[in-house]
Image (cartoon, rainbow, N blue to C red):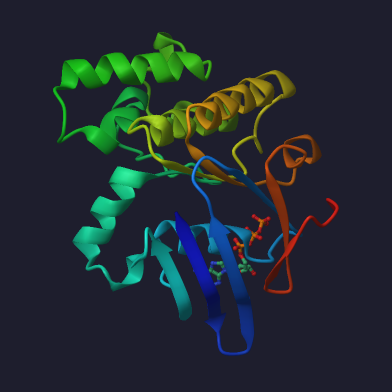
Length: 222
Ligand SMILES: Nc1ncnc2c1ncn2[C@@H]1O[C@H](COP(=O)(O)OP(=O)(O)OP(=O)(O)O)[C@@H](O)[C@H]1O
């Protein structure tokens, strides 16, 4: 489904973050990536999703190199196929909670229809309607994270890319999010998840560790 070939990315000449990463992502599988802080896990997820152009290498989605697409085509590709749960949430500050969740599809469906879906998703992640009209700045970290998760699920993406999706949550909310992700997987969605949480790292069909710019399969969680 997604073939990552010989990926390299650095932010300065002296310091290569991703050195040589190749990975074949198969539809409906769950991939877990762990590794020490600052090793480049978020950078790798951004490269895979089409948000950050690698310096070298390819990201092929069904054999098309997403970095050979123009900006509009790549943005359309992301909208159609990728749901991204950001570590730092990336909620739009001037939009309400419910508007943030509806945004991915705002030009595609009637608002009434979107509202019903967004409400259902927000409730599934434990955000009740007393928060719908609030701006993100007034939410706790865990609430923002759950709004970000609802937004990533809004367009029912084929691939869910999750950067520390439970990092700000208590155990009850974490388990609820994991249950939702497992349901997504059972419906056939592909999951790629970065985590520091040992419990979350136990899940997944394949587990990798990113270390010194390379991915190693089945490494024990550190
Ligand atoms: N846009 C950028 N410009 C310069 N350096 C960057 C940029 N983005 C990330 N970096 C650096 O690249 C390295 C890898 O960052 P990244 O966020 O990918 O790590 P990570 O493994 O996800 O870390 P963590 O587990 O702490 O979230 C870090 O040293 C970071 O400071």
